[in-house]
Image (cartoon, rainbow over all chains, first blue to last red; front, side):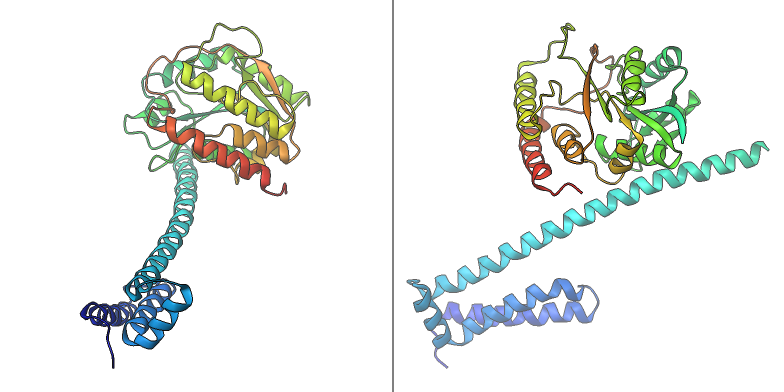
Length: 122
Length: 233
């Protein structure tokens, strides 16, 4: 197997390790399957670029990028951006649901308190 | 349907001025029911309201003035109130104008009556930055609706039952101003401005703090645009 630099080996091994770690998190139920998807895809893609120099060369040339390392970084940044956007969307939904719950709680608490008040007074 | 009007008072850390506001409402508008929505206060606002014998809902943490109103609308709709009026806890809104706002909705001249401090000379003079913002957003609303609303940021409004039914599910969380008016108008509700006088705050701090003043134009411009782009359902 041919590698362009030591950095490429480090990136490839690192990405593979990350993929395995993500899968292990899912196994231990620390990470939900739906959140693992983007992580697994991105780390496997980076590992593939790292281990297969011909693939990396082909993509780099096809994209018109000057250095192979830039291609790896571009993929990394692309995935990171996607992940952040995905998390922002999730967070907005969670905030909305959280708000609805809090409002519902306020209404329920009022009902319970007025019910117990009317019971003690009667 | 309950023919009475419900005055909804969202309050965040207003323990100081709220009792006075409640007394005033009771004295000036005894025909109205009152609901206080304590938006996660830490200064005993809810207790101050309960001490006055007013039904009080309490958010477990601060959600924003829009969310507090939304909770109030939900409560009003569940109890079948024909009209809900939004009134500030800080004494800025004069309860003497409640009847004027309510009358416009009750007599069917509009679905939302907006207490406006600009359509007649009332002596109110906002700080420069705020005036600029108001000018901008009344311009936005005018563009969107094809009719002018002078006071888009007024939080002194009366809403009909059908409006509250929509608002209990769909309401801006933090700044219920221009985007809300656009959304309501797009849904076919009629808006009407009613001249009112507004007073200086008596205590507490405004919902509109300096730190929000930069975020506010961005959020409201975007939300206005989105309210316009959303299909009116």
